[in-house]
Image (cartoon, rainbow, N blue to C red; front, side, top):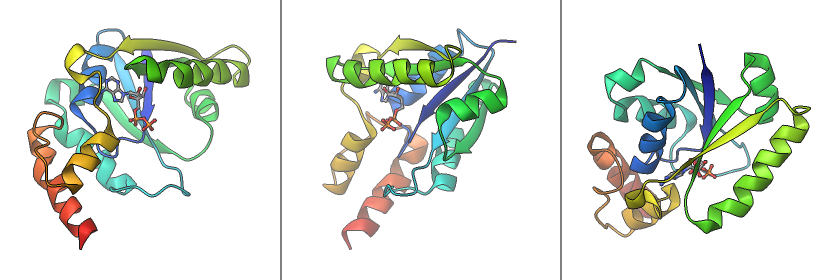
Length: 165
Ligand code: ADP
């Protein structure tokens, strides 16, 4: 069984992330969605909320094939623990390229050559979509329906309201 890891903050999960998860599952049989938590970073949604939103937004046929995990350490240590060497990343506009290449090379080096990264190009409609963009629109009471799953819209709007109070 081929297993891959898709790591990110997912604060919150967007349609762009969902698209990568669905497409990754054409390549792997099981996808570990790793919700990264950096204790020094401020998130809109805590780790439990971010995990729940991933499950809530994915259709059951995909939900069956994903496993949600959380980790605070180095990605390569998590990969070694799980015995998984395949990392899947989404690649948006050119601006992602520099960061993502550095990330891929560093992970390869830190894992003594074991960790491999596969990039899935962002779909045209999600090329410029990011969680931070969604948060920015939401905080200004804009329409986020094109960017996040319907099931999450209200939750995100509500959080935006709480944050401007
Ligand atoms: P970060 O923790 O850097 O904010 P994210 O959690 O937003 O990263 O994203 C995790 C992964 O998903 C990264 O590989 C990122 O490039 C990818 N990704 C994010 N948004 C999109 C999108 N709209 N289309 C394709 N890939 C995306």
